[in-house]
Image (cartoon, rainbow, N blue to C red; front, side, top):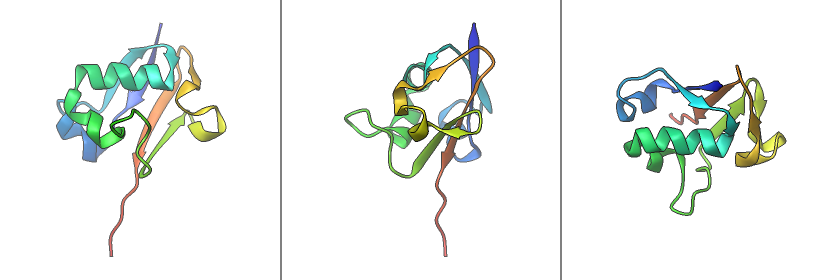
Amino acid sequence: MSTTVQIPAPLRAYCGAQTELSVAVGTVGDALAQLTERYPGVRSHLLTADGTVRRFVNLYVNDTDIRLLGGLGAAVREGDTVLIVPCVAGG
């Protein structure tokens, strides 16, 4: 059983140009662990040294922010999509 992690354009250079990745179901934390295990270069762009999500990165399961679902412990099920949305700043 698997779920999909959608990789946004700014992070694709660290993920072998992949637009999405199929990972085993579990939690959002498990999905990120599988992503960063396959592509270690993306870890520092998503997580702090202590393993928390960087404040400028938003994560969603389907259309719901993980902060409303229990954070990294939020469950992901067969067919769900984990969406990574880095904040963009500019002037």
